[in-house]
Image 1 (cartoon, rainbow, N blue to C red):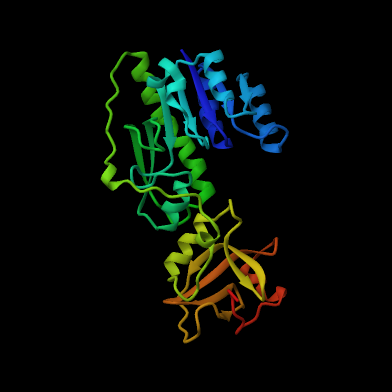
Image 2: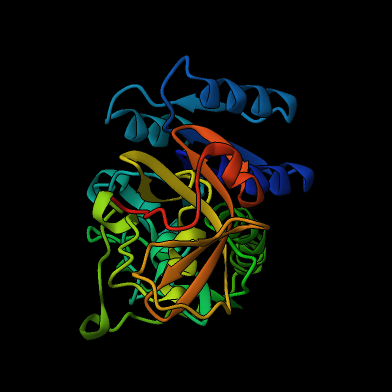
Length: 302
């Protein structure tokens, strides 16, 4: 059995390594820009594990790859285009998308970001059949994990990449032993589609956001955006990590109220302690805030 993997991100590496270590016949279609560092790294990875790889150069390459490589099963993981299933021919019954979000509640290209930002109690990964509609196919396998406080966007993507191996093995074993896979159609009435986050989605609104919302947003922006965005004296300040504080105050939200150990800022319902940040591209811990001129009484977000 030949197994194809379609991806545009390095999160597919645990899957490729897992399949290669099992001596599976695996091939990769990679949607990375030729010549860029991430594509070079993926080419080196595939060379090391003797995995054939085709790098996308046009939107039709993927259908040429399907025709030429003729995989029996395909797993899609972090690929940006919606496939035209009529061009997949008989392969369509064996194409599965790996989605790092609860379905049908978190359809769209950035489900980890939105689950973290929204403070969901649990985060889910689903494997579903593909249709002509994004993330709408019947679910074959799903797993739920508790949303822990130390989880960040990058951590969750890496973690789910490894958890996914369980689902891939489940599907492969089903095909190898001729078992019919149980399918759960999605409830369209509950479906919600989230677009890729834009600037307004990653900004801290000190006057409207409670401490828990700021905490969740910082985790959701770490590290793909190098932090949730605010400003200091007109300069972009990105916050990668905060803790919810206990300081009592009567200050306007966004006001610096302590710089001795960490950078403590007044919030709508209390305070938060900024433990790590990025000021105009310079990364430093909150305990060094005063060395950068930040002082009690200064205002963030203006």
